[in-house]
Length: 436
Image (cartoon, rainbow, N blue to C red; front, side, top):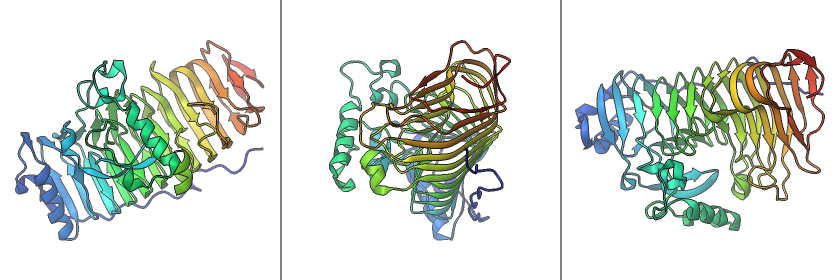
């Protein structure tokens, strides 16, 4: 029997940052629209604002080119209508910092916008953050021919494998040095060990890799944000080892998962051992992407208490509405996942997918997934209702569907190593069913 499910009245919403009225304009510190880098001027404006106790750093209307930006406690980066921060694609403009890449700690290129151990930080406004990534720049590093790579160009494959080998061998983070001369793309917005974070109103385009990536942070709010970009691994929002987060009234149109909830990869994830819990996702629109809401695959610290409500998901290029992906090298426990009042138009593969063999079925840490409840999901055009792949001795279990309807279903569900489901008032192609 399903347990107690999170709801808006049960989950505690995140605390918002304290915001001060002081304003500092980047133009006052020498920033000028055009092709000249404004990195130093932006850094000086942030430093001046932080030194005075915090406030708003204003980016006025116009296109300003910049390298890496580091926010400080108490500082709100505010983009006025018509403002564009266009980020350099020169790796030299992104210094070596401590970061996380696909759930593993390392020293690598700084995120385009980052903060470390900060509190009361924000990015707000009606402007645009343009990562400038394309098949001619960051995206080709993925090694995908559809993203500009061809033989003779560098790619991330060797570096990615080396990083994961280092983590498995217990090499300390400070000796996992990549960055210059290597090809692991930076994240766009990455806040690490921060509290009371707000990202509101802005449009984020063409990220090199994951777009919004809070790590080991708490009290994070993302609302009214639009994320667009169809490059490799250009996930929209990836909370990783985060406690209390709200994703509200956002739009995602991405080249990978729209929202992907994570908690560290394999040995590194178990060593750090911090779950993601207490996430509310509401009133969002998901278009292209591998999953509308995805859990995994870097999930070794576990995930619990996730509420998704009143979201709309539809695109010929959206693979799944809800997607869980993991494997026996990850471990971790996924529980207390509740979706309700979800409208699904078109999905290319299945409304609901759960794969315990993602990136391979071998490993000593079988996934644990339980208490996944889906209420009032309406799907209008899906290849199949379910695609479930469990493991011998570790079936996909604990999935309940209630008051759901699936129309224009073209193929039967895949139930591979799946425990019996709980189905209550579920209709497929208009017919009430007690089995799929």
